[in-house]
Length: 361
Ligand code: F6P
Image (cartoon, rainbow, N blue to C red; front, side):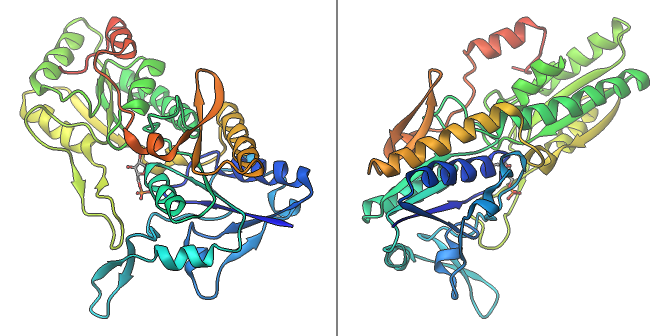
């Protein structure tokens, strides 16, 4: 029997379980593959004792509708920069990739479900001889090699539902409501939510904003007698003069933590003379939780089947992708070459402006 190992790395995202189930179902059809899962990304392989579980049908049955990942995940297990806590509490990073490669030798295929960071790891492992295939995931939709990542549509749906609720309370109280959404350096969630919800203002990392233009827009809305304004702001958004709100990540994490721009914007608006009452909502991890919408389940399932088919055919060193309405694959170089961010010149931004949405540029 051949052995395939599946793992999920980085932040979780609705649809991960649908990929795991699809890989397992497609592999079982062959009757020549055993399916295994590594707990908490590569930690399951590197830990002593190892945490590798057999993915039997009773483990994967019906999981496509569940959020999160049955295999657990972490963004602190990069084998190339593995965080090791020292006696004094500080963290040093070690390269454990060679050790990992040795431990992966018994597997005929490894399917790494993760974002750009995970796929960079996939590339290093592939170059060291591991038969590995990548599956892109992220609610941020910031991978340029695929037209969409699963999890994104669910995040937009959750954000839009929250936004609709804020509109009615903004209207009742004549308030300015600021809703902060995730997305890191990409404004996809914010922009899609702003269009779906009918926001007056949308602030994204790709278009730094002029606070005075925002105050002007708010004032004009109040003058027209429509005394409320709904703003969607991406966590990575920043003013023209200024920087993004962030804090150091946890020990061992490679990322700074974003979050809090809603409060920063609220203060900036008041300082710039905005007289309206303002309230802030930071949506946070709600956007990553719960049941994936149908689109994400389908995309995740197709990715899982495709990844396993690549493994069956011995085509490694690839990441599956969704391009021009079909499921295909790209090399790891292509997968990680460029971030997918919103282009100011895109029709999406132009259309949003056509709908009266202000970006503050
Ligand atoms: O990349 C997905 C994402 O949800 C980002 O939108 C967000 O900035 C980050 O992860 C949050 O990470 P954590 O779960 O580590 O706080």
